Image 1 (cartoon, rainbow, N blue to C red):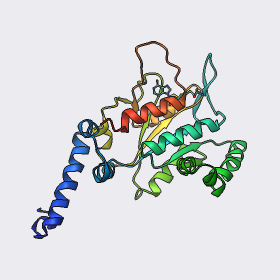
Image 2: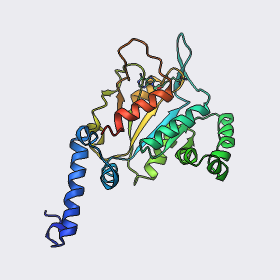
Image 3: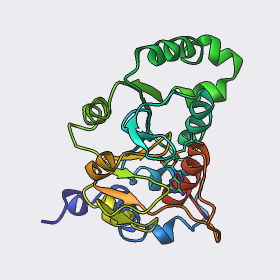
Length: 241
Ligand code: SAM
């Protein structure tokens, strides 16, 4: 069926329709190319509007703890992670950074932390950091995170993409060029990061995909989660023009 606008005779609207459709098609089919273009102004915002909404979660539950025989457990929240990962999230257009902890004492500490960073005190102290911190939301569990995302995306389920320092066989492994596969359904995307010794195998298995580990030309593989998040965001969503 020919879209109504194309037979409207309104040439301005027809041009706008053609441009936005071309951008949507290019983001879907050739994100690898469009991200290398020197985009700015309206082009930048119009391309960004076609990328499905992305969320991130930093897990302090359903992670592995222990050096010898790591077992599922919980970890403490590190405020340095919050500062750094919130800034990376703001840089790459992540809609919300969820911090998952089921521990009452940790949530209490985070309440105190956000009594500063989610109020005018934080805004007066450092407005750019306040802007990044405004993306942060604390949740008890992954289930709460998924419900929060669905509630702001017309009840659409998020596509879950796990990250890990090691290869995983229990979930479909994808690379940093597989946006088309993940974005195909135009669903929100949740990128899952771990702490401790990484995400449990059960949690990775619950995800739709797992991104290949970020690697260098070495065998050293002990990135901090803060560093890994920034690299993963840039490889998955970064503008390289
Ligand atoms: N307390 C530790 C720290 O930050 O120093 C946390 C380490 S934890 C294993 C690191 C998390 O960052 C992983 O669960 C994963 O989400 C991500 N990560 C670490 N290395 C990675 C890599 N090579 N590729 C992709 N993600 C990685």
